[in-house]
Image (cartoon, rainbow, N blue to C red):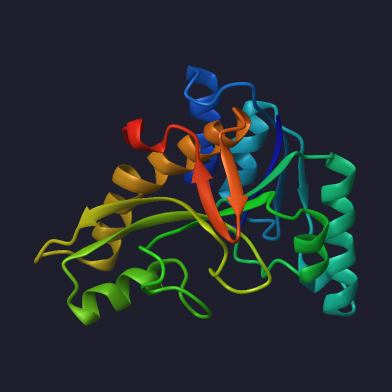
Length: 213
């Protein structure tokens, strides 16, 4: 399976994918492209180090959003991925891309959807709101991408306890380590093995009851 990974920042989830492919946690999979909208993203350095093809295109380089959307679609089509992985990508995925890759785009979100998700909930903002609300458990979710924001079918979730002395940064790091870096590679591997199906907007995973993560 060929995957394209879309990033905007440091690329910690990209690195988790690279490492999981290297150690065999993710099987039958190669990264055919890393795309970033941010030329300063450290994720690009990770791609270079791993010898992975990469493209950097910012919406600011285009006269209008429609032109950028078509360019992004062209970049992805040229790479011919079987799966598109949003790994900390802050670009809103246009409908033309969603339509071109139905149930073939997944995203990692740093909360237990449907809590703390949707427009405006990304990065540290998610964890700030979690702490402000005083919830006791947060976590991460891998889901398919549809035309909405964080509304696609859920593939995997993992809960992480919120501590009394947490800061947004501490909580973000713990959710990355205990949830994101585990369930994103697992979801990719399950898809590569053909064990994930979407039926009536619900995900069915072959052997789900025996999964450990």
